[in-house]
Image 1 (cartoon, rainbow, N blue to C red):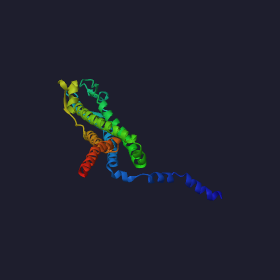
Image 2 (image 1 turned 90 degrees about the vertical axis):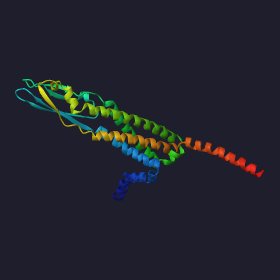
Image 3 (image 1 turned 135 degrees about the horizontal axis):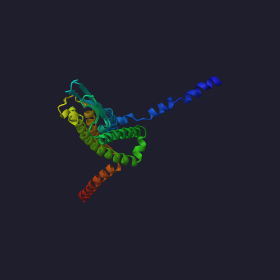
Length: 264
């Protein structure tokens, strides 16, 4: 008896039936509607936005050729990336003297505020859209019966729309400043050895900013997605129904009055 009961007990305790019940309860057809489909796009582009910005890293550099007897040539390579606190990024500037000493220098600027705000907003958008999708797909009756959920969803959607516009614009401006601070010409301009006759400086490789540019594009795409979704979320709120009732009320009364006049 114990041998026959043990497989049944283990099968009851396995999480597979619980997962199957959860998947069966999901209403996948909600994804075909604008409200669910746009939420999926918001979820994906939130990942693209904070992923492309948060994972960026680049390098800039310069070449310093000293005019001393040794004719030393120094290649300076500076690595930088998110969160773009450039004033903490160090590099060594050769002094082109007989001792071949160097001086520790730093890049200029701190652009962490717009970058971190952009990434943080993307992470919050990711978690909110994921929770909203679970509510739409699994607890759709609760969403339609309780009128507070559509109202909260609408207020949050409007807030995210505003924040995405601010974040994308601020990060776009911050990225422009990052490009200016990390140009090889800016690097050579900050080194005092390049302004004298002791050395000849030349620009190195220009940093590739393609991934950072795409992150700004994803930011504005998120703004348009959230702005477009405001209308579909608003249609689920009681405010939309009240507006329709008020619009239909006078027309029905006028039709009734007109019918009474025709009967007379």
